[in-house]
Amino acid sequence: MTDKGVAPRAALAGATYRKSSRSTAAGNCVEVADLPSGHRAVRDSKDAASPILTFGPSEWAAFTAGIRAGDFR
Image 1 (cartoon, rainbow, N blue to C red):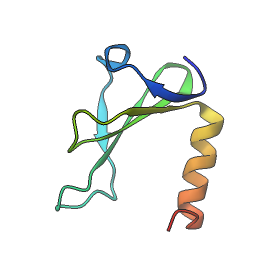
Image 2: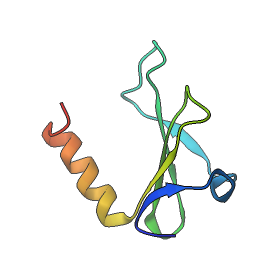
Image 3: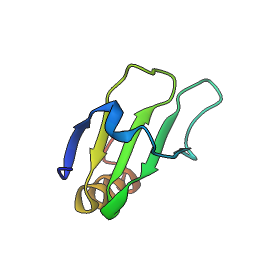
Image 4: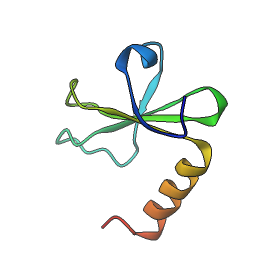
């Protein structure tokens, strides 16, 4: 698995996803799965055909730090 990218669905078939605490009742839901070696997979729970993004440990740390800092508003 590369550090980041779009993963084939079949490669993540056994992943266990959890819903983001920031998801809304209106269906704006993001789900995250912990993968081996510290990787993470992120998907849109309301769109089964949407890509599943994967992040390596350093990319995930930068992404979540950016969220906390308000960089994506």
